[in-house]
Length: 204
Ligand code: FE
Image (tube, rainbow, N blue to C red; front, top):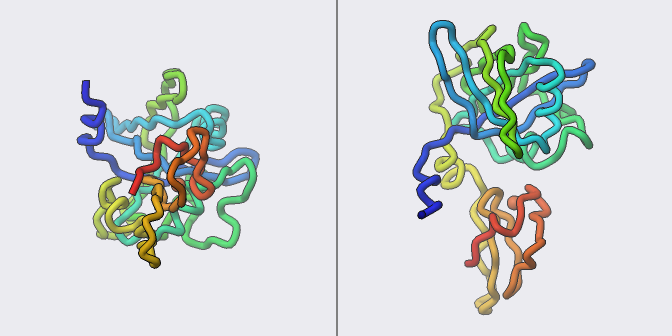
C-alpha cells in the first residue's frame, strides 16, 4: 500500500472559527466540503487537540472562511501555528467581520464564508466529524480559493538557501518551511514555529 496516494487528493484551506462565552477563536483546517445541497450541508473534520474543536462541541455552531490565493503567510501563522488556549487570535487583527451567528468570519485573504449549525457528530478517534446545516453564507471576492498545493508552492516561505557553501544537512518543515540544521533530526523534534512533529520534516 502506497500511503502517498493520500496526497493525490485535493485539499482546500480554511479558517474555522467559533465563539464561546464571548471569546472568538479559530484554527486552520483542510477538511471541509459540501455533503448535501437540498438543504445545504457541509462536513468538517477537526482535530480534538484544537481549542476550536471544544468550542464547537459545546456551542454546536461554526463558520468556515475559504482562504484565497492572495492570503499571506501571516494568516496561517495567526490561526494555524498557535493555540487559542494560550492567545487571543484576533488581537491586533482587523481582517474579519461579525457574522449573523455571532461568530467572526475572515475577510482578509478569504473569498467567502459559510456558517453552519451542527446536526450530527461522529467520533473518529483523533478527530470529530461534524455534519452541519448551512445557516448563512456569502461570497467576498473572486480571488480563486487556495489549495494545499498552492499554499506549499506560493504562500509558504521558501527555505533559506544555504549561504555558505558548507555541506551542512538541513531539514525543512513541510508545513511551515522552518529550517533545522543538523545531520540527524531528533525523532521527538517538534517544529518551533508550527508545532508539527519530526515526521513532517524533509531532509534537504
Ligand atoms: Fe513547521
